[in-house]
Image (cartoon, rainbow, N blue to C red; front, side):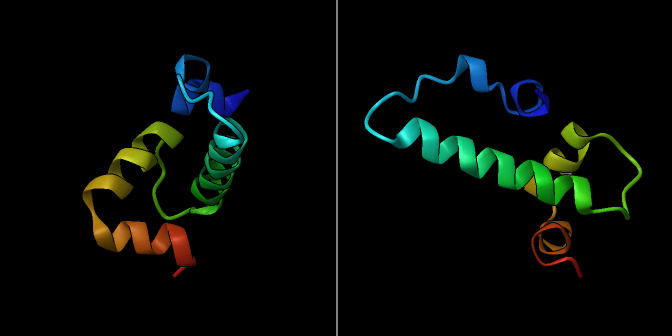
Length: 65
């Protein structure tokens, strides 16, 4: 799946309780938000990095503005 490649989910060491399921849900949500953001014509990995570096772009991704 896409989130395995983008977020390295297979290498995740989160195993305690329901944490692995919770983080999987967060990753899927983040991937969905990144896919919906259409102003940047780059791949998901680059969108993720841009959102980490640029607060205004992160706001676009999170709130669709």
